[in-house]
Each structure stands twice: as structure tokens, then as C-alpha cells.
Image (cartoon, rainbow, N blue to C red; front, top):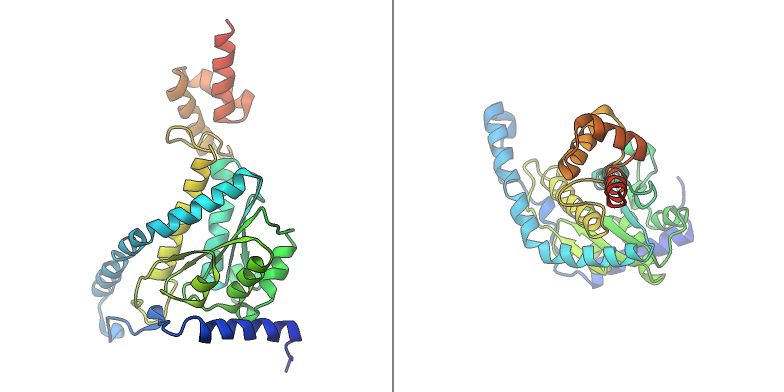
Length: 298
């Protein structure tokens, strides 16, 4: 049996202290019994109807958290305008969702690959296969963040449906101690994670259709919030013009065609002319700016 080192034991003790002393009224609604029973006896049509009925409650739960989400996004934008980065940390489904959102930012908004980062407990192996006990290590998130040279210009968002994951709470505690802005996305009210984060987002979705399966409603809620965080942040950073992704990476023929049509709608040129401009300038924004500058000088 492997004996945890002293740092690991100390950090877990601190999290236990947060659980006991700071969240006495905390209830894990995500772990409460489902509103449905005898699922094995339901036909597929009934299973789908009931799952869909539960899913319809998720956007309403997100709506209630909009004020918290707004405050968090404003804090992120302020830091990123000063050269900071955004980090998501999580375990299991929550960690994977953070990685998905982070990985979509470069192709969608044309930003550097390391501007938005997703880190999962257990490392890249855990993206596809669960790593035993990875989420219980309260010191590892800070180690993982330091590999990215985390600093006070950055923002770290902890993602955990339960709000009790040691990996995530430990990471945010260390960030707080080092003057790094912290936020969280959780699906239980009054959790240790929400207590730890400077800017908590609590989307209370209630019991899951399959009791305790937080990849369902909680996972959906986290994805909706992540969509808002990254999209609203990038819009405020000027990465969208009108309603279009003018800085997107032209990584396949579908996106090239979309880019050409964006140019056509912006400066009223033919498909062939827009295609040539895009090929020369490598982005929709640069193509439009080049055209406008050229014609302004004539």
C-alpha cells in the first residue's frame, strides 16, 4: 500500500476542514435519489421521454446562475486583456468538458493554443480512461498548473459537479494563496468548492435521472456554462465581428467555404474574388481589412 506524502495529507486535511467548518449545511442534491424508479422496466420511449423531461430543467437552472456567470466572465476578460490566460481544472467528466471547451477556442476564435487550457486529474490518459484515485490527490492540480507557469495574470476555473473533488479544491486553494483569480462551476449549492472559489458559479440541477450519474444533467449544465464563458469572453476580446468568427482557423474545406461566404457578405465581391482574398490573407478579418485598405487608397 502506497502511503501518501505529508503534503498530500496536509492538503487533504485542509479540504476536510473546509468540508466540516465552512459548509455545515451543504447537501449534495446531485447525489439524491432520482425522481424515477424501476428504470429497467421502462420501454425505450418512456426512458427517452423522462430523460428529456429532466434535461429541459437544465437551461432554467443555468438562467438562475447568470449573475454569477457574468461576474466571472468580467473577471476573466479583465485578466486576459492584460495578457493573462484561462485554465480549467477538473476530474472525470468535468475535466473532459474543460478540455473540450479549451480545445475549441483556437479553431473557433483563432487564438493561441495555450491561451485557454484544460487540465484533467490523471493527465491525458484520463481523457479516455479513468485513472484510479486521481481526483483524490489534493496537491496534484497545483503541480499540474505550475508546469504551465501559472501566475497572477491568469484565471483558474475549477469544474466539479459535486463541489467536493479534492483535486479541484486543492488547486483553487493554492491559487488563492498565490494571488491567482479563481472561479468554479458546480451543481450543488453551498459546496466546499463554491466556498473556495472567488467567483463561484452554482447551477443546481437536482437529482439525476440515473441516481448520482452527474455526466447527465450536471454535465449538460457545465457544458452550457463553459459555452457561455469562452464565447462571451472571446466576443469581449474582439474575436467576433457582427456575429461571425472572423478569426477562425481555416482547417478544412467546410471552413474555407464559410470564410469565403463571410467575405462575400462583408464586402460584396464574387465567390472567386473572395476565395483569392482569403488565400492571400489567410483569415477573414485580414482579407476584409486588406480589401478595404486597398480600395480606400485608390
